[in-house]
Image (tube, rainbow, N blue to C red; front, top):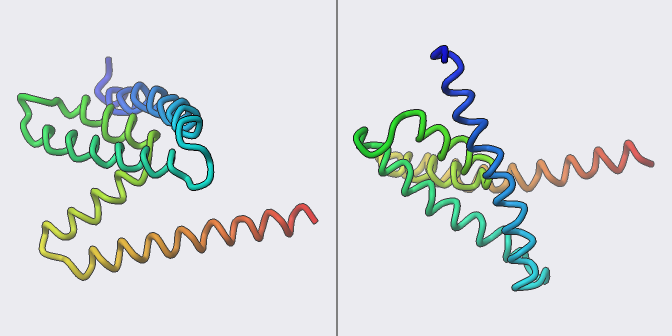
Length: 130
């Protein structure tokens, strides 16, 4: 297989089961806990963050994880399972590099701008359908 196809293929092979895992976990958890609060999303995001921590830590030891497997798991599976895990990884990476202020700013800023983005998208959609 050409080297130029290895990375995209690894991501694709992880993304499909990641998306399906999120879908079925959401159905299962909503059935278990109800829909009063977004428990399913909360638990999926938490489990994705735990998974991201495991993957990136194991990936620092090449004997334990190849770069292709890291892409399959971190970018493909966890990327489609939850992007929150990537967000949390980036915040903690900034903190570990001694950039506490930037980590806090990025973390809170992403949360705020994401919420504003959802509201803006909803407003645009409503305007287009009226």
